Length: 284
Ligand code: NDP
Image (cartoon, rainbow, N blue to C red; front, side, top):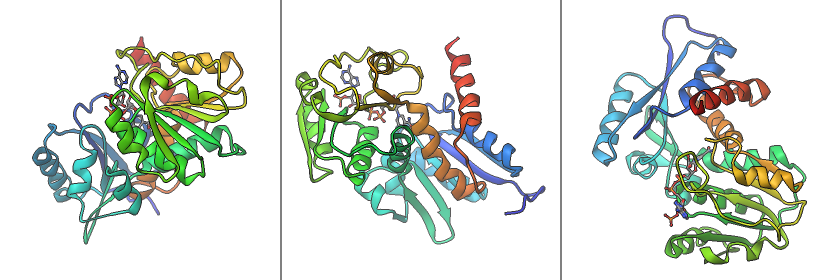
């Protein structure tokens, strides 16, 4: 696509709150690198469906190509869409809306984003047992990604057991266990994923011993603030390979960028450095 100097391509992220989103920096950096005349803005919409729909209507009127959707609107995005990909339907949530002429189309790139982050760390990983901590929106995407990648069985532990049961029901070879039993399935596991908000800046720490986890297992984190969580530190210290939450963030964002703004969205050390610097600036 040749850059049009007059008419910018427009995209956004809708959330509540949204001002801490790293997506505008990420998309603008990719656009600048590729010479694309693109803008990507944060849009705050209060946590009701009506507020979300109003924000989307406004963006469509203004000619936006699409938007990312973050908490608490990922289910609202699916409701707003005229159509959705099978992945978004299955996840019951969408983090992307593309404003097509025949109506808004919902997609979920958290699933492919997590899979890409895991492959980046360990492309040859044998898809054995996977242990997933958490059963929120992000955990749903993680479980669907692991199932698509062939991990089996997938064990889901969550503080609220009913939510663990619901997430485990997303995949054929998945099962829920009580939160208190979360260390037992680590024996023989190929991958451990923290998909809770535990360990995030301002949240309580994640309490788990990695003693039973094989050294060849990969430990993945979806939190990216802080980037180096105690879980990742502990995993590296005992020799496990790790995938951090920034890797997932970058890979899921690339799908939106390519749908709305430009072509490449290369995930490399340069773009990581830009985001790492911003995460460090905010933590200072
Ligand atoms: P949700 O609020 O939907 O889920 C939060 C999860 O954390 C639930 O499983 C919840 O358990 C668990 N949890 C929270 N507090 C505790 C606690 N004190 N003890 C035990 N479990 C707890 O959030 P999301 O799934 O949307 O997001 C989770 C994290 O993932 C956030 O930090 C978010 O920033 C990050 N994220 C990162 C992405 C990336 O691209 N890297 C993409 C999406 C999200 P319960 O069900 O019992 O409440």
